[in-house]
Image (cartoon, rainbow, N blue to C red; front, side):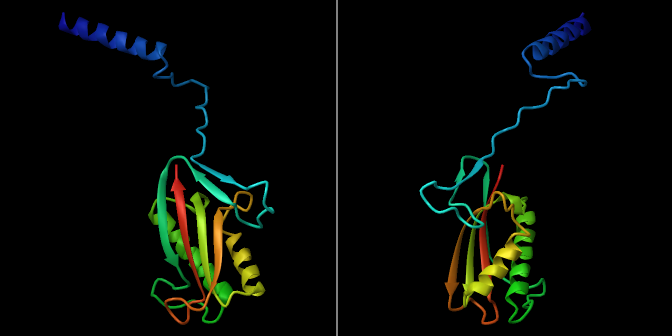
Length: 168
């Protein structure tokens, strides 16, 4: 008698679950509805179109990750490309990508970048944009700030990049 009661209860739970949409059959061809992104990158129509960044990143959910400034140091703590801005920028982005992975994120999750560049000039700006564009989604770039600075924490560092990322 106990086995019959358990079988009836299991059948009732299963049928209720199917009726109210809590379970689907293995051959169900219905795709799950796509969830809206917790991040919206926006540009103001009242400002000039930004070249390679967004004016604002609106975060409505997800997990925020704050990445400390990354510089052109390799795993051994040695500068990569002494006096070579492009090489240091590439190493800083590679380091940023590594830290993002450690935190369960990827470059496409970045919503904000801050750059600090020693001796900022047109050539460094062009090199930075070229390197940056290999790491970010150029069609949906994160918000960003670029500041020219006199120096960084080490005399041989030419760039430091910090980031904020959001993982849905």
